Length: 390
Ligand code: NDP
Image (cartoon, rainbow, N blue to C red; front, side):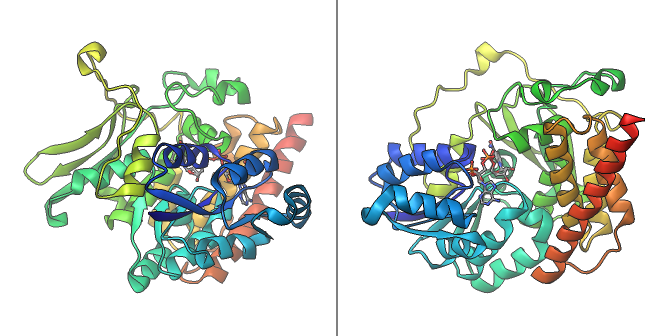
């Protein structure tokens, strides 16, 4: 029986993870859950999976939850300390890191430092603090299993091969809903348009990141840290069908890939049960019916976020943390219709240009850069809003 702590249990990845746990109740036990604001769903999950401890970010919501659960419920904690306790001090064998955004960093790092195996969905953790987290993984001896479908595909395609034989990694990207749109068309994009992803059902932030292609940029940085390769050896191919989840190119020209229908259950289950594979209730991939698969180069003019991410990791230090924080604020402002779709890369680029880079080797330095970037991004957003009223 593997004991799981699921951070972000009320999100898209969290709910899929609990679906797998329910399908394989003989193999997994839930010992800790954390959520953000969706108390109603968390309450349902508590009733169903009976964790020993739960946490939410706000004290008021923790109080409300305790009142609703009464004395029979699990321990209810709050704040970053509460999330850290669930990640590092609950009796979990594995922590599923599925909080969205920079909020996932501290609990994930704490899990790693406590030697817990981590199924990593929260890509922001490695984007912001890759050097620090990978050093902590080496020190604690824990294992980091990728949940992102692209990184899971690479992880699977590397199995049985020597890293020395790898020429490059190729991450595939669906291209999102605006793959063939012109710059003029992109001026008019609304949040509703951007939230309609053609292939994947995901949380709101990652869906917007997919539409801008920042998601792929964050994944390039994540792959750099996970697989210890320079970003110049990590390429991105547009693949609209999202069937080939990513590839490894070897020095003899061989390409090894993992294919499957676009459903996150497959990579989540592989991270939970590695090296075994779980039987999943998913339709098979029918390649004959599919007929054709397509690949193309990304359009850097219409989707500059990908280039911004490559540039951030080349600049190094705290730059990726700043890129990530500026992106979080820009996406939020776009979702609130305060700025346009094409303002997202403008905001990020402006904040990154203003940043005085420092080494990203301590949590304090990373959190300070993150905090600075949020303030700087807010200023740029206000400037854009001010200009649009003139
Ligand atoms: P969702 O937005 O669906 O879920 C996010 C989860 O984090 C929810 O449980 C939410 O709580 C919780 N949360 C939000 N803010 C905070 C906070 N400040 N403190 C604590 N908890 C918080 O996101 P996804 O499930 O889509 O994505 C989660 C992570 O996985 C992201 O980093 C994403 O990039 C990555 N990922 C997602 C994929 C997908 O298919 N969805 C694929 C690959 C990677 P609540 O809802 O209760 O407010």
